[in-house]
Length: 437
Length: 148
Image 1 (cartoon, rainbow over the protein chains, first blue to last red):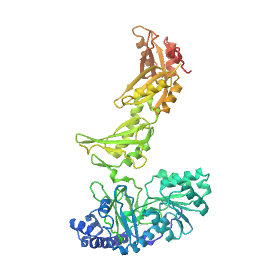
Image 2 (image 1 turned 180 degrees about the vertical axis):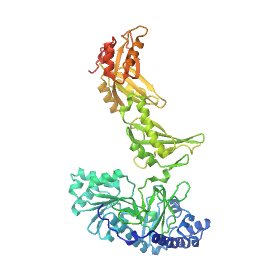
Image 3 (image 1 turned 90 degrees about the vertical axis):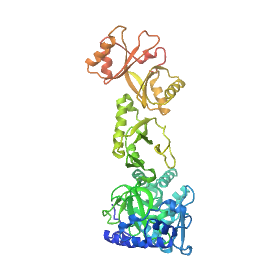
Image 4 (image 1 turned 180 degrees about the horizontal axis):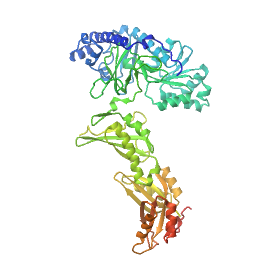
């Protein structure tokens, strides 16, 4: 790992200092929400809670969760804690169904946002020597403006390229000497292909050093491809508009998870089924409470993202907690005989199993009181056709590996190649038949 | 002397076998012997065809999971105990049978026996040396172009 610069002293506080800051800021945030947002006042009252009841950091557990539907129910400005004359910026998420989620920022919120992005781009290697091309779409989406402002704060030269027009992207990249690429990982992979079609070898003909990717999940395999295709060092960062936008967490050069800005956010991991807080290191749904936001205080927001938290000091010197790569969405979680299972866990096993393809279909049903699961996978290796023994060995191997995450035996059904559904967008690979009837 | 046989993976779905046979017909490939073994979820179809290499290419191009494997085909004599002699001979010589099936050609009086063992070369040589008639693909294809 090359030397990893640290932007702010607030990234290397002692645990006790973080806890102190978090408690006082949590108390302020709960008070602000209670006093200025009628929706929260009612919600807290219903839970039998007054701002004064938050006496320790552990009292956060008493606060009811906020979910995306709370934003929808209060469209557009119902959750704002300040009058409109104090709002200097609006953003909104792309609502795939119904109304978008609207967020607002005061002047101080904008300063916080710049500061947090400055931390993230610094930990990802960017300095004032760099030229950064922002290839996120500019607009209501928080990604482009968020990164843009923080990159300026560290003194990098920002090219507000926006997304699309890929050939021009490559031309600018070459002519301006872009060293830093900001985009979604999938768009970056697409851009590398287009560059090669144009006769440009991104590794040799361009000067990319750093790639900061976000806006969608990615895998380690994608990271390798990004590094190889561009000859850059890829990091991932995380955020969502409801909580601020990008800037919540990002990877440092040690690549040991994404550092959360703990002086501005309190992270928790809960069991998505019961809502109970899980101990550090355990995998569950990420819940985040921003504790410095003025325009839009949000209490215990359920991100639906599945990850785990790690508190050990990082190789880079930062003491702030790290969240691991997002493993999936809690919406997709299955509960099988009391065990929580994410399709991504099943997917990982199947991808690493020989003889079968990467596509699958899962069916969950009940037999009597017992949960049963069937997994269809595509057979691709004809070499097992010599005997049923070999076919059986293949399914038994997969079954055994699946058992380690499922806790129960799955029925593994081999089907022909290309016979399972392909998905271009969000894959629907799980059919849960238990809820019918 | 070994015969190229094609094994095709068959999910237990209505009409799946017909997909294979239709494809082969469209490509002018003649099925000389066919047998399907199945479990509750899937089956393996084993066929002896004219032009096995081309038949495999055609099947793979259509997305079937298929491979060529070899078998030994013999023509036993028509008398009580001849099959027993065959299997005893293999067993006494430490040859293990993975599977076996018999198939009939109209112009022949006797059915053939296809045997897949753990050592096919040894099996063929052994049977040949002990008075069993081991047949090749050209004989099975009779007057048809066997592609060899």
